[in-house]
Length: 428
Image 1 (spheres, rainbow, N blue to C red):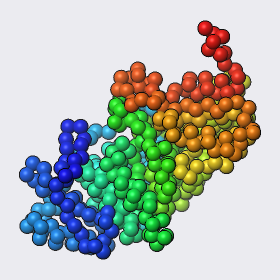
Image 2 (image 1 turned 135 degrees about the vertical axis):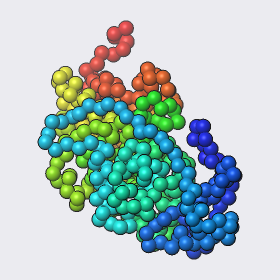
Image 3 (image 1 turned 180 degrees about the vertical axis):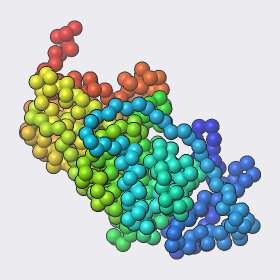
Image 4 (image 1 turned 135 degrees about the horizontal axis):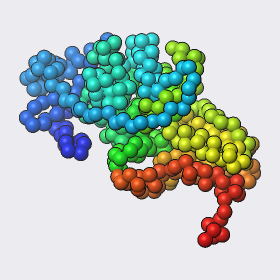
């Protein structure tokens, strides 16, 4: 028996419905025995015969009609988390990250009937963070599929549908819950192309909020960049701005390989200037290419997701003290744009890496390694690595702030690398 725990509720998977051997192992249905009710978690895909097969199997196994089965859908109601965010620009064209993601999904679903969205509350509730707002009304329940709180189930069904040529976009309410589905992400999605000698492509996107939010505790605050960035067969994208969100999500959906798309909850409501080019429906950003957000000559600062904004703010402060910092928005963790990073370090001769994840085996550690391997002779100072504290995230607000990088931490690290700070012993 497998248990799926969610704080005050749990689901017991006590029965499994088997499909014919001709179907991929990750296409399956689960009957949940919960408080004497049976719930069927089933896919409804346009052009697929899976529902008919599942209905026949269920009828034979449980003696229930298709109508009865279809009426039992377990739902989870969670209110969206909101937090006031500052605005960056007064440009004529602006867009929130939330709207950028929503418009990218809408345009890709309109362009390709094989694209569909699946996850908890993506349909009638229009997304826990309203990323899928309006999509159910426009595309219907066969392409915007609400699911129970069974990440292992709907992630597996998504992978199976990708085997058959569909392009699922699987939403996790938070990537912390993706650990329930990590076997399908890594063993099914990431490895199938290699293990089939290139015969099977898995064009699937796993997306949702990643990293710390605010006051949600240790189990909902982890950054999974390094986790998934270490897995061959996956591509891992980390958007910062609205342009990033639109261009990278479109690229992820069009890509023939599995993509882990790590968003940030606290950026959803943030507004960014956006170009006319980025608003075009054909717009797409290249996977594996970083963006130099701010050019500089004295020190390189690499960051991704929310930390890009912190790095840019730190660069403004450093500029007032005569330090001209170059800020690189990684955009992609796997593949990592090593060429852009090394070219910048060879120009500035100094490096600070910034991330919210744990320091050990982190993204910053990988960047440090590649710079030491390829550009060690160009370094004029030790590399500075800024990361989250090596502890589970505290719940208390004051401790939580201390557990993650702040703008002043980046400023201090850059000044150390430029030999502008006073040594602690001298100031004692």
